[in-house]
Image (cartoon, rainbow, N blue to C red; front, top):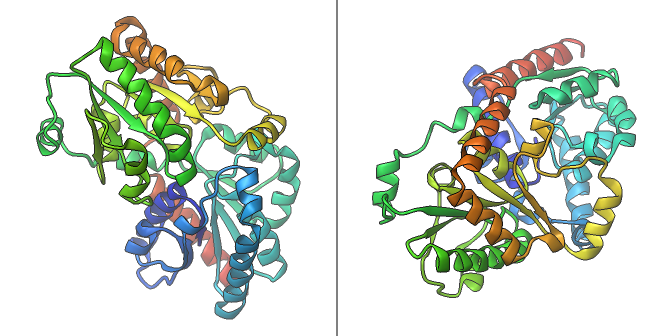
Amino acid sequence: MIAGEASGDMHGAGLVKALKMKNPNLNIFGIGGDNMAREGVELIYHTRDLSFLGFFEVIKHLPFIQKVFSHMIARTKTQKPDLVILIDYPGFNLRFAEKAKKLGFPILYFISPQVWAWGRNRVKKMAKYIDRIIVIFPFEAEFYRQHNMDVRFVGHPLKDSMNKILPKTDFFNKFDLDIEKPVVGLLPGSRTQEVQKLFRLMIQSFQKMKKKIPELQAVVGLAPSLPDSVYAKILNHTDGILLIRDHTPEVMAYSDAVMVASGTATLQTALLGTPMVVLYKMTPISYFIGRILIKIKNIAIVNIVAGKTIVPELIQNQATPGKIEKEMFDLLTNNKRRVAMIKQLSEVSQKLGEKGANNRAADVVLEFLEKTTSEK
């Protein structure tokens, strides 16, 4: 099993937990993070070593990525797994699928790479090397069926994790927050590069808002894969901002509005019904290349699922403290807009299916595993 990023580790852990409940004898090795390790996956590499943001950053680390790739292929040859499960992380995993398939290993992909957004020419290659794909968005199932792929829609795994949070009063008491005063959440991403590019902008935006709303509180949801030092260097003892670890869902749920890096966190925030402003910023050359390749209007998965822009996206040069503050202040004070956005976020949630996605995905995996092993 290979998951190269924090969100993939989270989804991988959920799948592994469901698989082992149904078949405790499974042995799983590969690339993942702390969550997958806790579920018993033997980690050959950790996601923190492989989470690079943008084309230029990937190119800079290509020798290391190639070393990891070669090592994982060698381990696959040696251990001869009955099944290879790849989770998102397309730059690495689509290459791995091709190589592993040529070596005779069955390939199952969980959490589709966003080829419908940026790489439609890759779908033919995917159909050639991927035996089955499990998707978590309904529009993805239709997309892959059109390309004659064996695809199964299971719903979104985040639906199962959103209930496992502290009650609001307990959360506010635990972190000495005033439940009577407004709170904004800061979610600058799960990669070091994201935090370096977005966290300072978020802090500056909060400081502008606090001049208008003196009682405003700010909480930062720390990524589990990043140490406190990544944030502390940027925060630099700024008053009124609280760093919170291991309670990011509570930060999303109990903030009055959230500034969030584009990615899985936007969907988590949507499922919890919290108004948000989505931010995205990368190196100029990576952004330039990305704009050429991306074929869809929106980048926030919330807006993509909705089929329209329901939350504001401030991308690259649009992501300035002034523009962020303007959008956030409006979300905090314009009740009509808040109510409308919360309603639209609820509609997004409904599109993502019922709870139990990991169990359904595990059933799909085990059925496929039984089929492939019986054919040997």
